[in-house]
Figure 1: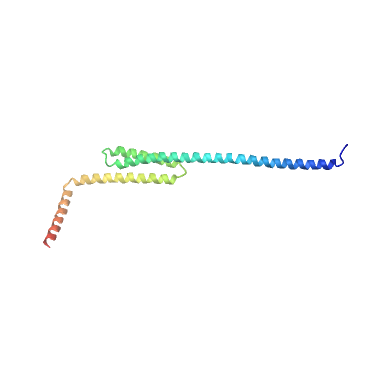
Figure 2: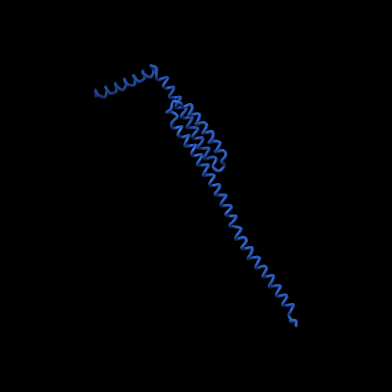
Length: 164
């Protein structure tokens, strides 16, 4: 015995099957993307963490070189072997320049620091040479004559103040 509405039943079953497959496909797609997107985000966040770690390590090594250079710059005028310390400072500044040029994220910031250290080194060198010139020139009678004249002027001012 065959049902009378067999063709309608087949059509209804086909429609049900079609909508069932579409619904299952939508659900599977939603689950797939909800799993896949966090993995991509995790990958991206891990890359960003690696970049931040590399930047932190670079900044730390640059800071150490800068601190070492600053310590040498502080003591370069006090030590008798200033030329040796000056060459070490120049080597550190060269290394720091190479480091700053290799880092593309904050290149101008680090190069500005290097330029400032270089200017400080040049100023210290100019100060040392000027002090050496003053010591050589000051050992003669010229400096003593200037001091005598200055003291005589001060004495005259004091005498004039006492007479009033």
